[in-house]
Structure formats: C-alpha cells, structure tokens
Length: 353
Ligand code: ATP
Ligand code: MG
Figure 1 (tube, rainbow, N blue to C red):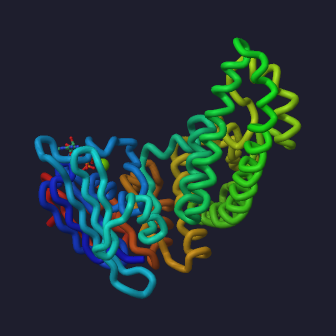
Figure 2: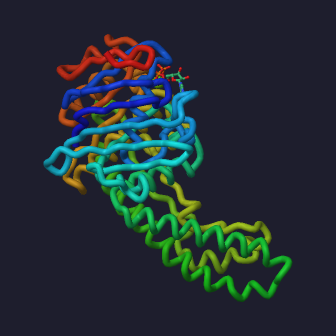
C-alpha cells in the first residue's frame, strides 16, 4: 500500500495543500501549529475511520469555509486507485475510484493505515476501554463483518440495559430478560473469540518489536482478560445486581487486555518512555498482522513519535520501518537524522514544501 498523492482543500488549516510522497520514509517537519498532524489526520480519514483526535467532522472544515475536500491517489491491490472525501454541511461523501459510496465505511479495507499519536499513550496509562477500542478498531479494519457484529452487540447491550432499568417499576419484564441474554451471549462469545485470536497474533509480533526497541533488555507480554469465564452463567448469576445497578456487568464490553513488562503491570510500573515504546510496538505489530492477513503493508503514520525515545530506540524505529511507506512528523528535521533515504517536507502555515 502506497500513497501516491494527497490534496487537501479547506481541511483545517490546510487551505490548499498537496503532498507527493516517496515510497519509503517521509518526514513532515515544521514548527508547532503548522499543519503536520492535520496532514496525517487527513490521510487517516481514508481508512474509513473518524479523526484519531476525536474531532467531529464539522471541526475538520477550515474556519469560515462551507466544506472540505480531500483527494488521495494510492497504489493497492497491484493497481493505482483514487479516493475522495468531502465534508459538507456536517455530512460525509466518499468516493472510491470515482464511484460514490453509500458511506465512508465503504472505504474500510481499501486504504489501510496504522496511526501512532502521543495521545495513544492512554492505551497503556488509562482504563480498559482504551485497550478494547484498540482491539476493536484493528479488527474492524481487518474484517467488515466484525463492524456489523460489534454494532449489533452494542445495540443488544443498550436494549438489555434499558430493560434492566425498567424492571424495578415493571417486575413482569424480568421474564423477557432471558431472550436478550441468549442473543447477547451468542454475539458476545463471537467478539471474545475474534479478539483472542487477533491478540494471539498481535502478541508474537509486539513482543518481538518491543524486544528490538529495548535491545533485548525488556520483555513485553499481552493477555486477554475476560470479565467472565462463562458469560451465560455470569449473566444469570449477576442478574439481581444488574437490575439494581441498571447495567450489564459482564461481557466483552467489560473485558481488558493486560500489558506486562517483565511480568509487572506496565500501567503501574512502566516509565513514560517504556509506555510510549509499548504503544509503538503495539501499533507496529498491528501493521504486521494487517500485512500477514491482507498481504498488503499498511501505511504507517507516526505523529511526534521521536520525543521521549532514547537514541537506541529512535534508531531501531527509523530502521525497522524501511520496507513500509511511513509518514513521520517532527519539529526539526535533525530529529529524523538516523533515517536513510526517503522524503523531507517542510510544513509551514498549512502549505507543504
Ligand atoms: P505541533 O508541532 O504543535 O503538533 P502541528 O503542525 O502538528 O503542530 P496541527 O495540529 O496540524 O499542528 O494544527 C495546525 C493548525 O491548524 C493549528 O494552529 C490549529 O489551530 C489549526 N486548526 C485546527 N482546526 C482548524 C480548523 N477547522 N480551521 C482552521 N484552522 C484549524
Ligand atoms: Mg502535531
């Protein structure tokens, strides 16, 4: 997978910007607030996802403009393809090879990328929702069927929770609970088994990459943690409590991924640089698993990754990535001096030079 060109029109501060990258490592450098992250974010949107900064679509349009248009030319599945995204009046319109798509979800699986940004440190530092989202987002990019499964589970869960809240006022509704439980267990178990199978592949790749980053000094391991060994039994056992609390206390929406460094919880004991290295290893492992399954190397987007990594880790990173197309942002080009080959682009006031 390679980006051939990206043009942005009225996208955040990129009023009219065009990037024609190299196939190796591309360094986007410039002072703060010039548009480097905005360029990565624009590329990311072509995966079919939302802004990795959690922005609403309306916030992506240049202040004062009525809409934005992004155009991408990329090489994938052994041919040149094009995609376009337009946001107008809060609505997205997506096109693939000039054919309009029903929604931007239709882009999923056509253009693949992994993104690392400083905020992703929450993956190690914050609560389990971040880790579940990471696993789910990776699986959604791999399997369109997983998106449907997850959406259906979330709808079922919302319906069961609404029912739990109604039961104290209408106790006769308790009888309908088993119907929801059966469907929740059915989809819940599928989600867990897909996450576990994915995690198994991810663990092998992430441990190897982490070992490279730390020069073999530290060992990373990951483990899936189920909120219930037997989901059907747990729903039954927790029923009274769930009714009291008004929510479902077991299921894949409560699971977690344990991250250990040399057998100690990274969340509690890891240093800032270690946490950053773990996130990086997870993201690069995600890229590797994507490649193993789809046969295409995803584009790697690294926002501000070099700060907080020591020289050895930076060196490993810059040289480990040589066979993917990479976009890496930094403030001064010297930060990426360990890099061999590739393109160097200055981003200034929303323009790419
Ligand atoms: P840093 O090195 O600090 O990370 P950056 O080059 O990555 O900087 P960006 O996050 O890309 O900076 O943001 C560039 C500028 O875009 C910021 O000044 C920001 O205020 C501006 N900006 C964000 N959204 C919009 C918008 N909708 N319209 C106009 N400008 C915007
Ligand atoms: Mg930035």
